[in-house]
Image (tube, rainbow, N blue to C red; front, top):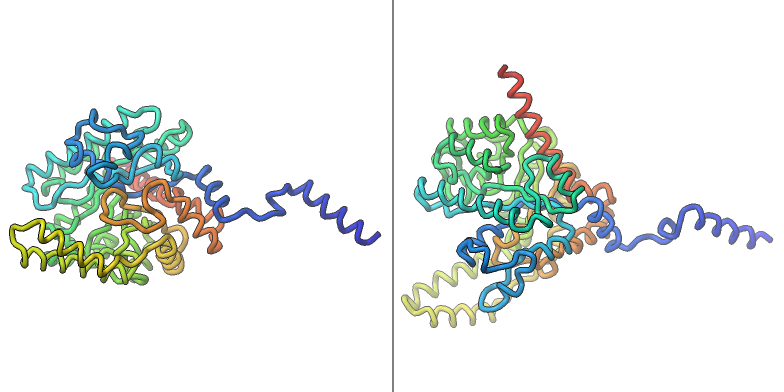
Length: 413
């Protein structure tokens, strides 16, 4: 009789709680459920640059619903299209508008406007799938409409040609963050990958951050030096972002965020959008990448003007020195570290797809975000934590930038 009562109690529990409560979901099921309700808002994708370079911005040459047939023959396959964004559970994408930092100022301004134009044309060409988003409320509206929110991020302050007026007009055209530098140090802000000029921000650099606050444009600190990070955090009245960076405490790299800066994020409210660039997330891959670049320079010196000989030399080196593997586990290690130092509220994702030479082995394109979320679920991240990483943290930062601009406007009256 005792055993019968036990089985009867279990049956009643199943009836009340349902099978999913008794039988635990797999990490893959957790990932799919989270992304169905809270689709990813990714901080950085370079598809506009690919469209400009591969297709000369000619929309008749490709179909963004599926770029595989267009780019799969005779050129490297693009990482991004609408079909794979949907497969990957991406509900919002900051499209990066990047231009070469070496361009003269007047040409830089023109080229960044042309890049912004590509994003607007993408949205106009695929209105059933893409929706322009300028605010956090716009992102929510896009999700409700079943569309992918399309946002614009300017990658590099060289794009404004040392002009606050150009900054304001870029905002008017839809740019909602600006990375203060790219690889090159500017007159007003030091880059992480170039010699410093201002030991952080110059006086004009401070005015750029203040004007971004006033506009409601997020300050992006990827690519900048540690001194610039700290100067910007000292000045800004709104939360900052790192649109595509990882943790220096896991992999020492000039493009990653030091622990000293991570510790400031809870006070500021900002978010590190962890990137998937192999050399940023794996020390072994970082060293291999440096070795390959050195060998490329050596081949150029050994075989001047002989492209075939250089290519053969590098092919032999690559065969003898295979790239160390990088997987979603390496990305998750960076997320773990940022959670431990700054907290779960300060993590997002910025894959840098279509802007990188190599991808992690199991994160080959924008369709693969569920792989990472399954890995995080396997490590014990709750559904609520995963939803924060996917979108809610960056939405909070967006609202913070918007509310700061509104408060500054009120105080001026």
